[in-house]
Amino acid sequence: MLGRRGRPGLIGLAARTAVVAGTATAVSGGVASRRQRNDQEAAEAQAWQAQQQQQAMDAAAAQAVANAAPAAQQAAPAAPAAPAAPGGDLLGQLTQLAALHDRGVLSDEEFAAGKAKLLG
Image (cartoon, rainbow, N blue to C red; front, side, top):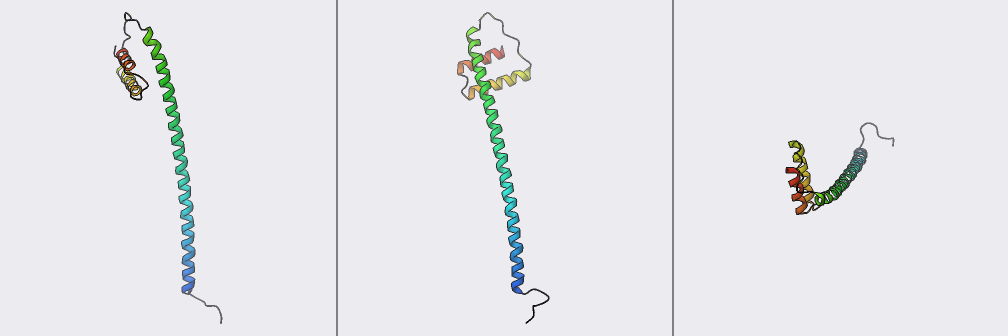
């Protein structure tokens, strides 16, 4: 019997469908794994950046505490208060002072002294 010509039979059609479906699954799996790898790298980069920002904030807080302790001890009651900085800068300094207090870096007394110094 000679080979069949023309349209493929039922088995040939099923085999072709299986090959197409397998190829589509392999391609979509590769795309998904690539996307997952890219998402993982982006998450690691964000975590590293957040860690660097936290370290910088911790260093700034430690420096502020170190600078605030001697300044509070050396402050003379007769010394005139420095004029307040422009409004936007004053608000930023007060916000930073409150953030340090909320994190527990500054005690209530240090916070009150810093606020009084900023407000004049």
